[in-house]
Length: 287
Image (tube, rainbow, N blue to C red; front, top):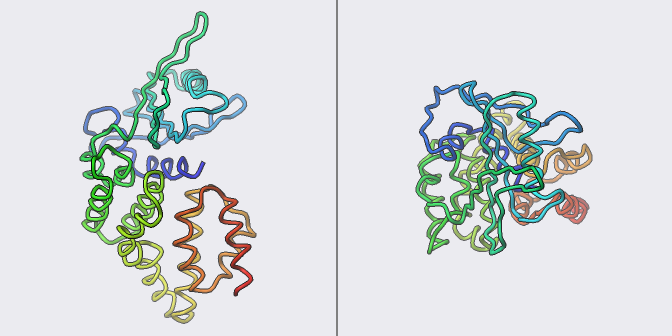
């Protein structure tokens, strides 16, 4: 799922921010947190995020956009717990974080004869926005938190990103925020609020221009900008959808500068890898 991949990326890049939020205790950057492998043994299943905290406990996070799945989430959470307990023999705290607002019932336990297991459920739309706006690693989730004025909240996210240092981290956070905002906002609203930031600050533009200028010293400015844009778009798409095929990467690299700019905006609407492949099929012939 594309939104799962974005959240996995954020959790692995900012484990202290996620752990502090979920456990309700501030953890400094000096606190040792080890990001564990997410593929668990015995017919491997892959968790969304696993952290070893102070070598004393395990924090397990699953990101969800829907309430129904096969196998059901409660059974999966029990399965994760058993595998983690077997492998690490440490206390385990589990969170299922729901991204998209729903009126459907969300259960937080598995129950069967002689077996019972409970985990924590977080509904982002019920969470206060302040902690998300205050922590860079949580900032992309802020558009999905509780508010009576969603557009104003999205504007606050834009303002907060402007305050971050101009670097690759800022660019990645901005793009993640724009993509996750698609769970609540239309593309038109997202672009009306974030368009200027995306065009001027994101890795699709500002950093790419800088990378292009640097590469341009060796291979010409135009070629350098093109290579930087294509490389960064591939990087973002991999974070969203997982691995890309060699053919997809080759097609992206073959796009011209205008097509790369168009793709950077079109990907806000992509829900699955097939959308990218369909877009490439429609636009590659225009080269």
